[in-house]
Amino acid sequence: MNGYRIAVIPGDGIGGEVVPAGIEALEATAGRFGLRLEFTDFGFASAGYWQRHGTMLPADWEATLRGFDAIFFGAVGWPEVVPDHISLWGSLLQFRRTFDQYVNLRPCRLMPGVRGPLAGREPGDIDFLVVRENTEGEYSSVGGRIFEGTERETVLQETVMTRIGVDRVLKYAFEQAERRPGRHLTSATKSNGIAISMPYWDERFAAMSERFPDVRVDRFHIDALAAQFVLHPDWFDVVVASNLFGDILSDLGPACTGTLGIAPSANINPDRLHPSLFEPVHGSAPDIAGQGIANPIGQIWCGSMMLDHLGHPEAAAHLLGAIEDVLAYGPGGAPLTPDLHGTGTTVELGRAVAERVRER
Ligand code: ATP
Ligand code: MG
Image: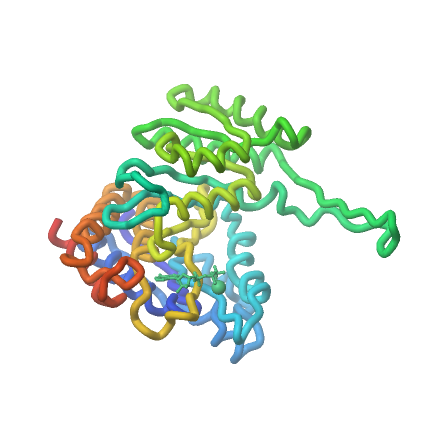
């Protein structure tokens, strides 16, 4: 299959600026690889929609989006107009839950020309993938308060791990590791302190590893793992973690690789029963919105992840290569945006990547 229908949701702020740059690069890539991408734009999941309708999404959003092969998302959130908990719960988290996007993916790669915060690291030294469980674990709402307002006030919140939920994210992580040259999977645990749920996670990890004999495995306690991300990021290839640990690692990982403007993420339903969603790590960036200077690389990289998910790894790698080439030209040779110490605009940088896609 070579034709795909993509739902486009630019959302708020710089979402509306970086998404067109992402589409331009995707169209160039599709042209090179004989793919047909049909983009359909939606204005919901934005502050503007909320102002007009009092909700973030139309009542029939699920039926509307269900027929698409993927969702290409910009950023949601405009705190001056809608409180963040409403914009987030009213849109992204609905998608995540309804479409059972049980994997959150964050590639962490030190790109050429990007100055990361870790001294002495070269592009190529850091290149790993964080796979986060996205539906259960520590983020359950099982629990409550008792003896409220008294000295015995007690609060409980349970971690929920199901065999299906744990196994399916572990399996996905092993499959990702198996595809990569390093074939190395690290599990984040804390079974020395969290005595019931984490030993179960370890047990399922060990069981799953028997099905993937080609993947080398290890595990770290989350505290040591966080330190290791900073001290020896070159150790990692694919890292799999529960919801809470993955949340932490998927911010720490991209932070080790430099600017927020280039980091992508994906919420994936690996079984392809529902559309997956691709969105940059950054938010709507109200402080620079409307100036045309937002870095579109995170959004474009999301496009590469989307092509990979749709089953076109060569096209995905080609687009990522074009991004790397353009970044490697530096501010002297490419219209890099101000966050990358250049004077280029969103449109110019997006166009440079699209051109590179066509010529490389
Ligand atoms: P979220 O909406 O996810 O909570 P946030 O409000 O914490 O995100 P962002 O909106 O991502 O944060 O902005 C954080 C900072 O990073 C801002 O100063 C913003 O200008 C900058 N920034 C974010 N994205 C980009 C980008 N694509 N290009 C350049 N700068 C960016
Ligand atoms: Mg924000």
